[in-house]
Length: 288
Image 1 (cartoon, rainbow, N blue to C red):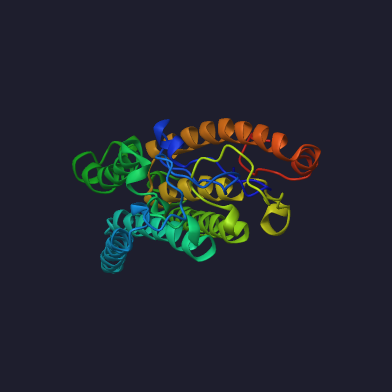
Image 2: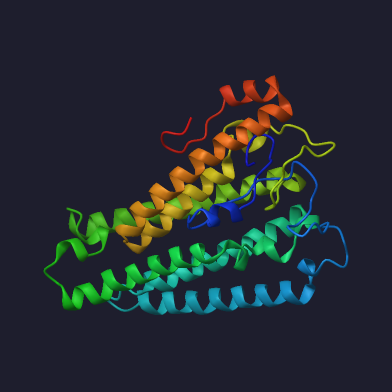
């Protein structure tokens, strides 16, 4: 659960429910993988240095190439394709940070799965692929072949106010990206060894309720961060369909997820968690 206890459920469950992606929350129990292998086991292939290095290299390569393409595209007047390459750079940096922060502050849980790449399942890849394709369609195909169809244009292109509105929309999107990623990263750092991406069903010995730092304001800061980060990616891309799709799927998932997690946390910490819950917020619309 990502909450005042810094505990969490597995990120992968979200993907099995056809959502684009989700954060996890810190450990509350035994640190075992799906096959029962302890994370601290030196023979655990999920901690293979070569596998970790390969993924880090590929993410770095994608980030570098995507950033270069973005910088080249923005120098060309009326070239909107920087948004697609910027999306790839944003995704690659997100996945790298997932592993890096885990390795830095909870090294025992720094397995290959901490990158949240292949473990996320096909639905994750489909969601981001659709977002990428919608961006290309709205900014390139629709403008060339369907110039008169307003509903096929990028969201910021149909806002009243012209260039000023487009600039304001992009500024909002980048602010959401930075704030969402920063909040999620800060939550992982503050939770430290209590944060990982595995399903936790029992309270681990020595596990305490964390109510300080960012957890003093938000009960589920990594969920909050990912929710707004995910929407921010679509705002920057100018996607209409995926913006609303991400919003609905993420909101529904987190509503059910938080309810389930908080039932576990009440069982773990009793009245201490109830009092903590009453004085903090989730800060995702319509989720108490």
